[in-house]
Amino acid sequence: MDTFSSYHPVVNMTYFMLVIGFTMMLMHPVCLVLSLICAISYAIYLKGKSAVRFNILYMIPILLITALINPAFSHQGATILTYLPGGNPLTLESILYGVASAILLICTIAWFSSFNKVMTSDKFVYLFGRIIPSLSLVLSMSLRFVPRFVAQVKVISNAQRCIGRDIHSGGVIKMIKHGTKTISILVTWALENAIDTADSMKSRGYGLPGRTSFSIYQFDRRDKVAMTALMLEGIIIISAIISKQFSFTFYPFITNMHFSFLQIILFFVYFVLCATPILINVKEDVKWRKLRTKPLLSKT
Image 1: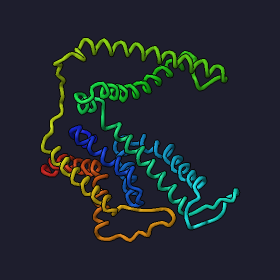
Image 2: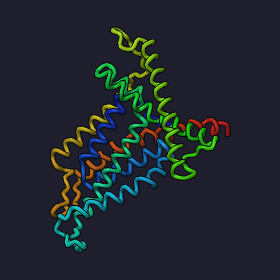
Image 3: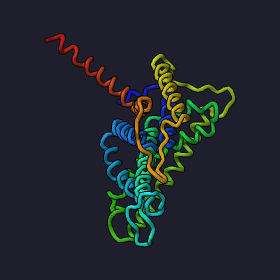
């Protein structure tokens, strides 16, 4: 169970805004590596084997393709390794910048996958329901219906397979015909589900003035401590960005990485920020194991 997901939605949203924003802003190799390790570790903690499979099947090809695209089109840099068949130089700087861009893209995808898992539709409605009710409703319904659509496609495909309409067998024409039938059933189900949702919202008084909403979220002491820590870490990292402590250039020369004591501290703060959910979960797991083993130790 993910303990960080049980925190207040404001804490969850603040964390993801900080970590995704800093990941997209900072191109320093150390920051990219720290963000990559924490993003993949948290995704694996949330989704288990499916996250490992996703990283192997999709993330690695994305990494390779993105890393190869930049040196193929960008020929900047002073360190020329060789010349391509077209006569353009292949530089070390363009290769490393392509690898850094690929890692940044993978980190962003991994963080957003965790964001989609933690920030459920009810959290969206709680955060933005009063400020922008229409947009929050659309976002929450979109996040809710996408996994439902995927699950419904599997149900329809299994049912069609049982009556001999498998979309993965037969000729091309049969596959197209069976796929069209599956899509038609899915669209019909979606329209019926939309009508049911509209009727349910109308019967519950959606849009009426003075209508209140139920919420199970309370900002307790645990949330205050986490929010204070996130804000302090965010302020420290923003100050480091303004003072160019995380600055790193690839063109025309790669910056020589000489770490000062201050930079090491700032990198540690950035790591703590990225690893906040993992640290919280590890702490709770250790606490839970101690509670489970304590009665056994007392009996012996």
